[in-house]
Structure formats: structure tokens, C-alpha cells
Length: 146
Ligand code: HEC
Image 1 (cartoon, rainbow, N blue to C red):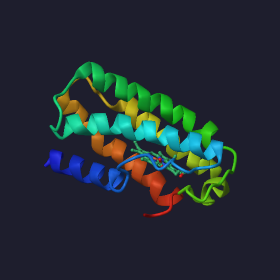
Image 2: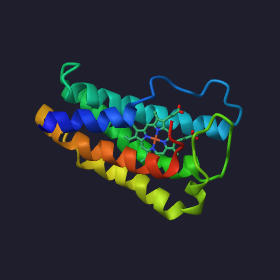
Image 3: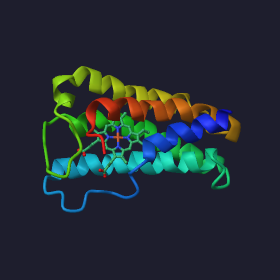
């Protein structure tokens, strides 16, 4: 049951994000924040793959991915602070109209990663739903639906 929920949450989060969409992005600030999100995706993918049993659980790798998410969450505000746009960007102007909330949602992702115990598979599985929920909450409000 828990596994099912994890799969659902992650599926919804990662759907349609198969590869980096930064190709052809002219605006360097936009490119940088997309790369940052790409790093977030990779770390989440590492954890999700283990949680779903697609790859063998590796506590060291899981710990690294968890730390990367904590670091990336802290980098989100600076990466998004300037209201830069690019035709390829999927960021919504609502970010800068609701900046405090956007920052809070970035923080929520960092907190979820911090609270994730990546030392054992069962605990990792237990925390993935919450983590995935923080991606979804921000994307739902601040990213163009694809
Ligand atoms: C605080 C808000 C916020 C949080 C939290 C967040 N994202 Fe994002 N994410 C965005 C925004 C905004 C964009 C669009 C950036 C752009 O196109 O300019 C984005 C884009 C992306 C992209 C596309 C990058 C690209 O190359 O176009 C991926 C993949 C992604 N996010 C994955 C995740 C995952 C996985 C999580 C959770 C672990 C997460 N995000 C959490 C705001 C957030």
C-alpha cells in the first residue's frame, strides 16, 4: 500500500520530464534554474528508483541524493529571485507575485529531504510520498501544466 502511494506520487511528479529541456534556452538565468531543477530531478530519480525497487538500495548513494536535495532546495530562492523569462521556460509569473509563498514551498522541499531517513530502504520508501508532494505543490502553483 505504501509502495503504491510512493509510485503514484513520483509518477505524477516526474511525468513528462524525461530529459532536460534546456536546449535552445537563450536566457542564462533561466537555463541555470532549469539545470538546478534538473539536479533536483536526478536526485529524486535516484531515491525514487530505489524506493520502487528498480535499482538496488545503496545507503551511501541515497544519502548523497538526500543531501543534494537539501542543498538544491537552499539554492532555489537565489536561482529564481530575478524575474527572468524565456520562451522555453515553464515558470509562471505567479512566482514573483507570491514570492514568500514560493520560498516557503522551496523550504518545504528541503525540510522533506531533511526528514527523509535514507539509511534504510523502508524509511526511504516512507518519506518519498512527502517529498514528492512538495514538488507537486510548487509545480501546481508555479509551473505551466504540460
Ligand atoms: C519552490 C518551487 C519548486 C519546487 C519545490 C520544485 N520545483 Fe521543479 N520547477 C519549479 C519551477 C518554477 C520550474 C520551471 C522552471 C523554468 O522552466 O523556468 C520547475 C521545473 C522542474 C523541472 C524541469 C526542468 C527543465 O529542464 O525544464 C523538473 C524536472 C523539476 N522541476 C523537478 C522537480 C522535482 C523532482 C521536485 C521535487 C523533489 C521539484 N521540481 C520541486 C519549481 C519547483
